[in-house]
Image (cartoon, rainbow, N blue to C red):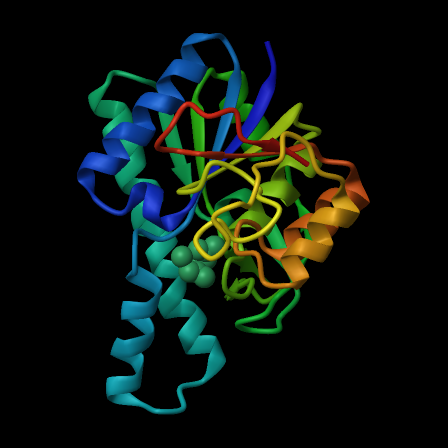
Length: 240
Ligand code: ASP
Ligand code: MG
């Protein structure tokens, strides 16, 4: 039995059908007896749509209010996933960042995680619940919600895995893993089975979209093993 953090990106939970599909992946892992913590992004284009809504009202909204708005995307995802799992008869609970205690700096729209309290997550796991946590969100020392920068759910997942000393951090996206180059541009690009943190950092900084760079830095610092894989295929993915 292992403790596994599983993160699913926005495209993997874009609509009801995909949420149900991902719930099936989670259910299979839970059935194997693992402790599961799920980290989710906002569904599909939700974050961009929210930015557009803000622009309609104020071309220069304060970053604090933007964080209040954008953090709602991830909150929708975790509630919907919990409902999908409940419908399958599985014990689960959704938690926002402030409920977990994902403490961050106060730099709205680009906050850094400072510390993650593990008591709440651990006590839910002890009761054999699947714990579903909002990615991308933090809470600062004033109790205000913050966000971690675009793509920040990857960092949330890695940081939670580090704090819980998880055995594995799986990052599910819509690609099969990490390639030597962008497979959409370079058809001869090869999928890698394993890549070092340093090589992955180089790829991320040159714009490879599979993983947020800060997440890889975090993983290297805390020696978190990341498994990057597709939510839509059984392909083996890439270990970082
Ligand atoms: N929903 C946020 C974004 O689109 C965070 C994430 O997807 O990781 O940037
Ligand atoms: Mg997103």
